[in-house]
Length: 342
Image (cartoon, rainbow, N blue to C red):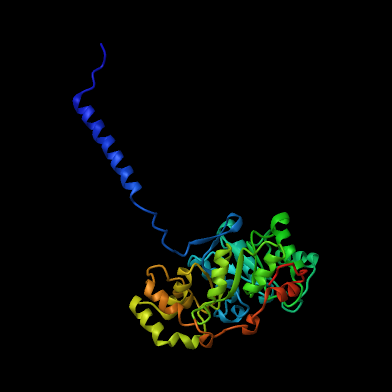
């Protein structure tokens, strides 16, 4: 005898089908997904499918003396304990050994850590292809004790023909696996344009001084338009500016310190702050950035502070930002000028 479906089963099925259709329609009308909230674990996407942590601690040489006797090793371990996974060192800092020791022994899986170092081309303006590869290998084998870094930068602005070093960095990433990403530090738009005009891949990362009194609008806009991530060193700006009454009003409105507002402003611009700090107390404060959000009015207010050149202030190397044109940068990079270059 054929089975007869009971009336109440049919009704239940109809209700379930109606509920499914309703949810689907709601999904179609829900609009774009809400972007994920920022956290200390947030990452930023680089070209070539690499994810970089969006908050980093600078491991400058001063940490050897300033971290209450514990040195750079203690500073890096304390950073990891509060969730930082991005450590920024350089050959010239003298802290590669400390960073490597911490990364190897901290208990965090290597693929969960991000290590940046930088080529010391401050005093040797022109390095050959082979010299650059050898220098990176020295950092890895004699100092960091790692098989690769996650990001390797040309540290100095182009003071000599650096194109061979740039070719070497691309080779180190693509053929040798010595770094996952490559970039430059202290370059401006004209120098990046020259690299592009010469037919070379643009950096995945540009690291420069950025803060509200040196907002770098043109450079940041250029980088974001060309798929280049921006890292900010000196992200807190001149310390005398922390007492700016306008900054104090915004900080008080959110129940935060001025320094926290400055770092949050960078995060909301899609910039990676590389902050430096001198004590565990300041470190904890510097990562306490994720329970508030600056309003659109806050962002506009802060962004205009350095809009006029007369209001701009540098913490570090102001002379590197001399206005260049693309043709002169091609010559400085060691590239043959191309037809049509302005």
